[in-house]
Structures are given as C-alpha cells and as structure tokens.
Image (cartoon, rainbow, N blue to C red; front, side, top):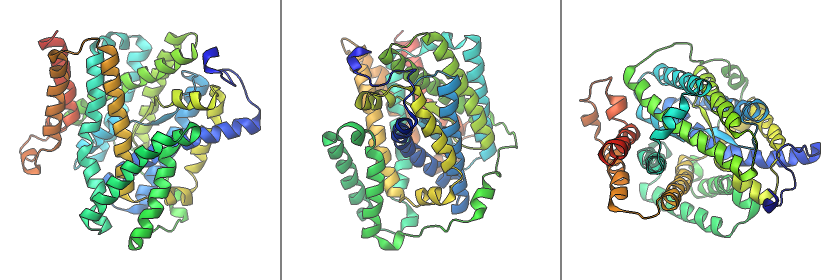
Length: 427
C-alpha cells in the first residue's frame, strides 16, 4: 500500500467537505455507463420518450442503492458499480419478445447467483473459467453488441444523412482516443463524461433540427412508481440465455473484487468476495422487480484510486446517495435523455475497445507461449458469435420461439463454443 502513496486508506474517513469532493469524483465516473446503457435499453424497449426517462430514473436509483449497500455491508471496497453490459447482450437478443420474461430471467439469475455464492457452490463453477475462456468472453461482449452500435449510429429517427452520421462517429471516436493519450489524472478518468457533453453540443450545432428536448413534468416522478415487473413470466430459451450471461457477470464481478483487493492488500478477501457476489445477485433480483438492467462491480476503480490517491470506501457514499437523488430529479434525467444516439453509440465503441484491449492484455499476460491451439480456442467462438449476431431476420424467423434466445444470441453461442473448445476438444 505504501507504493501507492495513498492519502486515505480503505477504512479512513475524510472530513465531510473532502468526502463530498471525492464523492463527486466517483459520481462523475459512475454516470457515463449509466447514461449509455440506460439510454440504449430504454430506447430499445420503449418508443414513448416519457417512459424512456422513467427507465433511466430507475437505473440511477438501483445503481446508487447498489453502491451504498456494497460499500457499507457487501465487499466493503472502493468499487464503482454500473449496469452490466453482459446483460445488455441478453436484453438486445431478446427484442421482440415479452419484456416480463426478460426481467423475470434477470430476477431468477440474480437469485441463483446469490444462492451459489452463499452456499459456496460458486467456487466449483470458477474452474470452468480459465484465462482463455475469460479472454474470449471479454471479446464476445464487444463483438455481439456491434449490431446495436450500428443501429445507434445510423438511427432512423435522426433524419440525418448516413454518411454524415458515419463521419461524425469516426471523428468523435478518434478524438476520444487522442484525448485519452494526452489527458492525465481525474480528467482522464472522467473523459467519457466530457466527451459526451462536448460531442452532444457539437452535434446539435451541426444539426440543430435534431434538438427536441422533452419538457419535464410531474408525470416523470409519478411514473417512477409504475411499470414494476409484477408479472412473473418464464420463457425457457430466454432464461437459459440469461443464465449463461449471469455466468459471465459473476466472473466479471469476481475479477473486479479481487483486483481491487489485491491492489489495496485488503484482509478477509474470501469473506469480502462472498458477500460482494451474494449482494450482486440480490441486487439483480431487485433490478428484475424494478424492470431494469442489473448491476455489476466495475474494474474502473484501480485507475481512479491510483490517480487520486484516495482508497477510502466511505468516499463512495456521497456518490451512491447522489445517484439516488438524481433519480428523483426528472429535469436532470430529461437532459440525459436528449443525448444524440450517435454520441451514445460512438462512446460505446470507445468503451468496448477498452474492454477488448483488456482481453488481449489478459491473453498475453496469462499465456506464456501463444500457440495455434490458443488462437483456435479464441477464434471459433468469436467467428460464430459474429455470424449469429448478423443473421438475417428471415433466418431468425424460422427458429422455434423457445430456441431464438439461445441460438439467436451470438454471445450465448460464443460462450458455449469456447467452453466446448477449452474443456472438451483442447482439454
């Protein structure tokens, strides 16, 4: 810990003014992924802009509550939490089906994860996730979300020439990577926030006719207490699809908790890990009831801690509380909802490239001598996931309804393929 030159260690409590300042930094780090994932799912599921805003409100509330619960009673580590991108894969693949089956599956998946963690059975599943499997899963998320990103960039609702949309997206993405190269400290950690803000302003200056902000009203507040998933519906295919997604979510959660624990040399890590994963499961149960995408612990925290020198878990309390308060301020959520889809899609490219890079880094660090066999274990699942993700609609229409969420989901097919390649063919 001394090598990190920390100003505040894990159990230190800064003064309230400093606590609020550090909490604001965490808040700025947490907001981008909530905006990106929340807006994507809301747009996919609801045409009514008012219902989209309510959906984002609920995501803010659930993520804020998740941060507070984990920091105070869960893993008790300075880990930022956000919507699980792997569940976004499942939600995207389930479009056109019954929304209740999606969130019932998230409810059940979270419950099973909590039970596995509490009982200790989760440790038996960990052996399936070798470095090659984990690397492939990280890459699969990026590949299988590509069709959704294409839809965001070339959104038909924007009424902008597709070439103009593409040029804007390319310039925006390269600008983000250029800024990432030169920015330092908290500015680099909060790059996504500034990029979305500046990108939206430039977009509206270039295409002013696309600026159609909603008028906030009291209905948004009243709407927060509606649309809960009280209709429990099970579709076997959708459930299997989400259970596979939850396997990947659990490994993501485990990796995030262990990485920050090792960085801070925290004590009682088995207990922290068990509590953290258990609460992740229970918070996904809550998400299923709220009818929103579930949370997961992110691996962003080490970079923030290294740049600020603050590892106190208590500094996340103002961030969690701030997110919950924002959930009940419709004008703020309304402003977030007006971000152009091409900005959201372009930002997601940047985020997924970082995840792809993390996968490659893990591959090169964990595999001492890269052989053809390693490439095959990674390559076939990625190829299959791309093929499935871009299947024509008329081909998908011929699939049995119960089989669509499985064989029509590039991520699920990719995960099954990598497990077969790793543990059966190249065992």
